[in-house]
Length: 343
Ligand code: NAD
Ligand code: UDP
Image 1 (tube, rainbow, N blue to C red):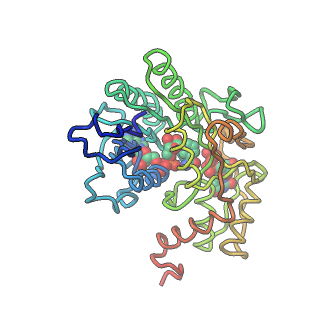
Image 2 (image 1 turned 90 degrees about the vertical axis):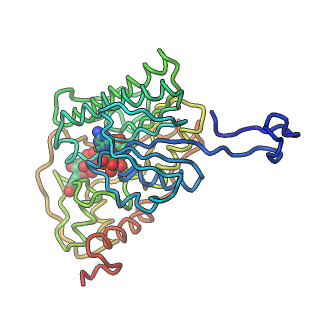
């Protein structure tokens, strides 16, 4: 909406008429809630490179200052410790709303807080969008499809979600966040975007967040067995974080509200994933079967035709290409050196 300012050829509309001819990219003021987290910090990096002014709002529940520390001292960057469950007053053009724990271990840790973050936190950020006329992007999730009865999942599928299960604070919370987003859009004319993100991996993921890719990578590096839950035949589709960030920015800048599935359609069973991790890190890594968690979706794979057609977006990084980047980041964080010798 405000990405470009058109300057008149003679500079008549600009005081002094000193601005050069043609299109000039206008720097935006952008707030990224959850910007100290895994996805948020990569998004912040891209926005900073683009020349925007970025405010990160984060309560550091799962995020880390280290993820954004390299921007401290830059006058275009601001870091605010704040919980989105409380209102905040800011003057911004765009809001990327990511604040919410994303891994099952974290969101089940305090389910009431998780649903409050999704419902009250989203309302607060939509309220902010309304007050200052900002465009609002919600990072929803593939979990809104629950344990899907349709495969792959298309945006028109309404999902199969347990409203009273242990995952409900997250998946029903995100479904409500989507509802709020659409109601603010339809009822109050707020400009909104909705992304439904599928499993994403990459550098800066929390090492012990219990998600399957971080577990397998950390386990293989620590010479521990890879813990496969259930029979390991359940599937997920893994997207590298740079592909997601590209998709989020294209969605924000584009014309379409969504929801859009943002994910990599290459589908793997957990046993296949374990094999890729073995090939990448340690071919001798053992596999250990563990009982599966409650309400675990059996399969998940995005249909991304809508994003391809309307956003011109699709992922370009395969699991085998993306995984080594995450492995070197984990190696460094676990052992403190590049080779991972632990020495
Ligand atoms: P993350 O846990 O690394 O990041 C979440 C960030 O939000 C953290 O920095 C955390 O401290 C912050 N946060 C949590 N509650 C907050 C609160 N009440 N107030 C302020 N800050 C708060 O997770 P992520 O993987 O980067 O996920 C980012 C977003 O993307 C989340 O909304 C998540 O639901 C969504 N998403 C992620 C994935 C994925 O695979 N990574 C998949 C689907 C959806
Ligand atoms: N999983 C596994 N071993 C682990 C952690 C998870 O086999 O150490 C399985 C889990 O049961 C699920 C899949 O991996 O079927 C993805 O789990 P994750 O928590 O990463 O994400 P989500 O369930 O939210 O898609």
